[in-house]
Every structure is written in C-alpha cells, then in structure tokens.
Image 1 (cartoon, rainbow, N blue to C red):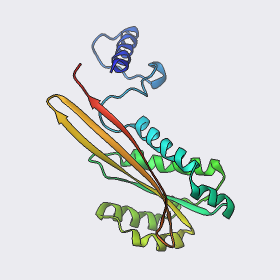
Image 2 (image 1 turned 120 degrees about the horizontal axis):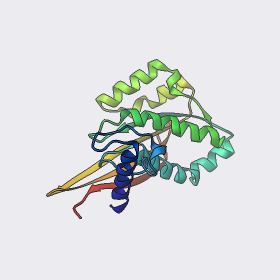
Image 3 (image 1 turned 90 degrees about the horizontal axis):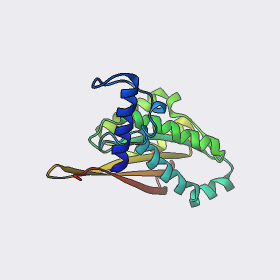
Length: 200
C-alpha cells in the first residue's frame, strides 16, 4: 500500500503547489504521476478492466481457435456486451471495453468485425435479455441477422469479504468465443485481480 500513500502524497504536494491548502482541486491524470494507476477504492476502475481484458486477449492470441480462423480466412465476428455479474454500476466502462476488444480484433487483421451497434433492434433485445436473464438459445438467430459466424462475449464476477475494518474484493473476468450456429464455446479464459482495504 506504500504506492497509494506515495500517490496521495503527490496529490497533496501538487495541490499545495497550485496554491490550495485544504480545498479539493480538480487535476488531470498527467498532472500527477501515477494517478491513473492508483486505486481510489475497491471498485473496478478503467485500469482494472483494461488489465483483465488484456490478459484474456493475450491468451486468445495463443488460442487454437485463432489458428483455425487464420486457416479459414478472416471469418465474421461480433463482440457482444460483457455481462456485469457484480453489484457495481460498471455498465458504461464495460460498453467501452467492447469497443476496445473490437479495436484489438480489427487491428489484428485476422477477422472481419461486424459491429452490433449498427443493429439497434438486436442490441435492444440483447440488453433486455441481459437485464432479465440471458438466454443463449437466441445467439444463432442474432448471428444470422447480423451476419456473424462467431460471437465474442464475457462476464465479470466478484467475491467480497470483510473482516473488522478490512475488506478484500476479488474480481474475475471470463472472455469467450462462441460458435453462433452450434453454441459451442471455442475459447474461454479467466483473468482475475484483487483489491483490498487493509490496516497497516
């Protein structure tokens, strides 16, 4: 936790340099070194989600399904929303993560990425289903409607424990590749991280 104290100290020094003693001051990330990397709480932030996603995508880069796709010649893929199975309100950052995954797949050049955002009716239906309990049997129909052979999707889970004034939250992100026609899971990987409030 020393790095967190260093970051807080840097913020304090920066604020003092700006001329404020006790009032909060708005700063940009580049004004305080390490600000974007430091944890301000046990909730998932952008840095956490990026880390979890990149670990999963690194495993995907070495996967058998990607090798098969290279032989197939750029199959069509759509990235579905990542399901939030936590109690946190992270729907916005998870939507941004879908665009990040699309960007990685596009820049990789191994697949054709079909954006579901351009299919508003399907996206509305998917969002309704995610809220009311996801039914994977609709995947084949959605895939045919958008012209996707495979879906990328994922889930985020959490395990939260408390002891006196301490708290530990463990996060798990699963990314999957699903064959639209058969429903088979062709790739799945789990990444995880822990955040905590501890007494020193």
